[in-house]
Image (cartoon, rainbow, N blue to C red):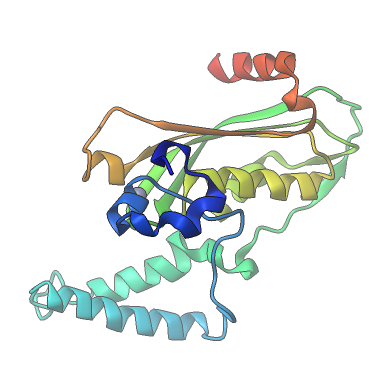
Length: 230
Ligand SMILES: [Zn+2]
């Protein structure tokens, strides 16, 4: 099997690759974030306490002096940041509440929210990837508050992620919320696991896209790209 042709379905056949290969090539397994059974049995407070303890261990193993004033609260800070901020999107309880409105203006062309800045973390290296998402949809009768588009991007970005899954999770959720297939999502992001380590390429960015319904039409894609590139 050629590595270039590796498909998602082939993931289980990747045993001939090292964990470095799989991580650096950012191979993703599917639409759903892989979760264990019953992931929310522990309360957030319990999770923070346990992560703090475990991060303390990591720092100790690395040889750091955990009695130093600058370091002593780092495990607590990291635990709080993981649970309440950068991985808060793992918990469906944190999903943004979405209200829809009637499309009173009868606006029936594409609506685009572009340059939505987001911060996420690569699930292979637990370092950030960050960039901009562009979302477009055509109303099927309902419209969504513009800031909710940002909130949906943030929710799915606040997980250990791969960019392809982030793109598809946002698109699939919007299709369901807006009751239409006419949704497009484009993400352009910079991965710190590519720039700050590994291959150390500081200039490359990664672009992923989802084109559903009318956005599969080449004239619509061109129209959308013209607006985004303005
Ligand atoms: Zn990575």
